Every structure is written in structure tokens, then in C-alpha cells.
Image (cartoon, rainbow, N blue to C red; front, side, top):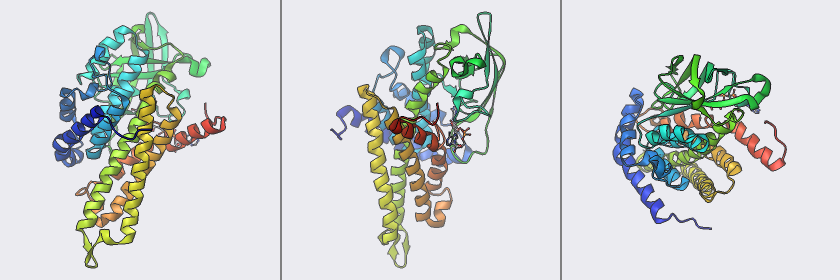
Length: 384
Ligand SMILES: Cc1cc2nc3c(=O)[nH]c(=O)nc-3n(C[C@H](O)[C@H](O)[C@H](O)COP(=O)(O)OP(=O)(O)OC[C@H]3O[C@@H](n4cnc5c(N)ncnc54)[C@H](O)[C@@H]3O)c2cc1C
């Protein structure tokens, strides 16, 4: 058992921390107010090679570990969760499924461009009538000549209106159920593909989220990602890694929340004393510290299992559930500790709260994580 970071891990963690301090923090409030996607910051992350952090060198990346990607994401999330997940999601949800399931031409076309930050992808599973139960996907893919014609709608898709290409899961034969599902890579300029932004979200104001519409959208068979029948597996090969990202970035946000609350409680005086000297305030901060430490080790454990090539599904759901719920608890307490000031964006805690609610949903809801954990320990699956 080793809880120490090695030299390289420490180096990347410190580099991300310094980057966050210099390049992310100064603009976070303005970007949040103006709902600006952090393109400039992503460009700078690319110039440091970080957008290719866990992409193999032969596809233009740095070939680093999940542990290092996690440490970098944790540090970036401390300053801005949207920046952290913009980086992590491109690797976990876009490049990784292509690396795992794509043929050489697909890997060469898309992965190096993602690693260099030249192209951005999206990953579209969820639909207006299809959320947790991905097996009931309604978007159709009908075989036509040497390709497929897609018709249907996807919603709540990260990067829907800005992605250069989308990984889409569609049904090729309803009678086959999940065995009929297939994944496709569809370029933005494909006729029949359009998108619209989802406005007025509670949080994630600097993340693009939207709907995608496929109307007689023809895609050649060469853009099919993985075999017909493996659409869900293609998708899960990205979603599980993303759950780890959501867990470890939640830890970064909890740490930011603790630091904001400690500072505020030392500086804010009531009844002639700093509020931090009151035991009831200390209790709230202590709860956050315990959650943060516990969540951090759950997430680091997942990273370690992944890097060792050991099974990590159960541990990922445990970490995702614990860390995302803990982040919402911390942010909610953070607002109360800041009193009325916590209810305005002059302090970051309200953003932590709004952003962290989304983490309860993305990558599978808390209930879905509970069903995965419950199914694993009882051997009885509530959902298939
Ligand atoms: C900001 C944001 C970004 C997103 N980005 C993407 C993306 O890039 N790509 C993508 O495909 N999707 C994306 N999503 C969608 C996300 O994956 C879904 O919101 C999530 O899977 C849940 O689906 P749903 O919202 O339709 O809820 P539903 O599945 O309708 O669930 C509603 C409620 O019922 C509960 N529930 C459902 N089934 C069960 C059950 N069997 N037992 C107990 N409770 C159950 C759920 O836990 C939840 O509480 C994003 C969502 C958000 C908020």
C-alpha cells in the first residue's frame, strides 16, 4: 500500500495547479457570467500537451497514466470544474472509445487531432425519451448501400453545438434490442445533422450542452465505430472512465470549497469573534474535510486499479457516487458558512453548488450507481 505520489505525478499535479492559478482562476467569474466556453484555456492546455495526456504517443499524446490525468483534472477542477471536465471528457469519452474500438483509419483521423486540441468531439447516447435506460435508444440507423441513414434526436449532449464530430449510438434493428445498437462517428458538416444549445441551465454555464438532430443523415459504413451489436459497449468504454473523472474533479471542488470556507470563517467576525471559532462552523468544515479525504482516496484507488489493469467498475461507481454527493454536501454547507454572501457570485461557493448538482446526473445518476453497487454485491441485477 503506497499513498505517496511519485515524482512524475507530483510534477504534473503541481504544473496543473500553477496553470489553474495563472490561467483559469483570473477569468472564471467573467466567463461564468458571460457563459463563455473556455476555448483559449483549452488551447493553452493543448500547447502543454495536456489535451493528449492519456493518449498514446503514436496518436499524438503524452501516453501518461489515468492517475496523472486524474491529478491534473483534480487540480483544474479546484479552479473551474468546466475546464477540468472539458479536458478530461475529450480523453475519456471521445478519444478512448475510438482508441479501443476504432480501426486504424478512424484512430488516425480523429485521435491525434483531439490530442493536439485541434478537434473536439461529443458523445451522444441520451435522447428525449431515453436516459438511464440506454438499451431503449430510439434513434434509428437503417442500412442503405455502403452506409447507414440516421434519424432521431439526442439531448443533453456535452459539446453538441461546438463539436467537430460526434460519437452517436443508434438502433439498427429494434427487434434485436441492445444487440441491434451500433456506434457511429459523424462529422459536424454531414448533411442532415443539426444542433441547438440548451439554455438556462442551473450550472455548468461555461460548458456547451445541447440537442442533436439527425434527419436522413447518411454516414458511410467506414464511420461505424465497433461492430453492430456493441453500441452500448462502445459507449460504456467511455462512460466508465468519465465516471472516474467526475469523481476526482468533485474532490477538487470539495477542496476548493474547504479552502474558501476556511478563509471566510477566519475573516468574518460575528459576536466579536471570527465565525471559524464557533464549534458549529468547525463541525461543518470538519465534515467537508473528512468527505474530501475519503473521496480523494476512493478516486485515487480507482486510478491505481485502472493503471494496474485490474477490474475497476465497482470501485468507479462507489467513488462516483460518494464524491459527487460529497461535493454537493460541501457546496451547500459552503453557502451557509458564507451567509448571504454565499448566495451571490462574489464568492465561488454558489458556483460549486450549481455545478456539482450536474455531477449527480452525468455519467449515470446516483440511483444508477447504487444499482450497480447493489447488483455487484448481491449478484442480483436490478437493471440490465
Ligand atoms: C450537464 C449535463 C451534461 C450531459 N452530457 C451528456 C453527454 O455528453 N452525452 C449523453 O449521452 N448524455 C449526457 N447527459 C445526460 C445524462 O447522462 C443523463 O441525464 C443521465 O444519464 C440520466 O438520464 P435522465 O436525465 O434522462 O434521467 P432518467 O433516466 O429519466 O431518470 C430520472 C430519475 O429516475 C431515476 N431512475 C431511473 N431509472 C431508475 C431505476 N431503474 N431505479 C431507480 N431509479 C431510477 C434516476 O436515477 C433519476 O433520479 C448530460 C446531462 C447533464 C445534466
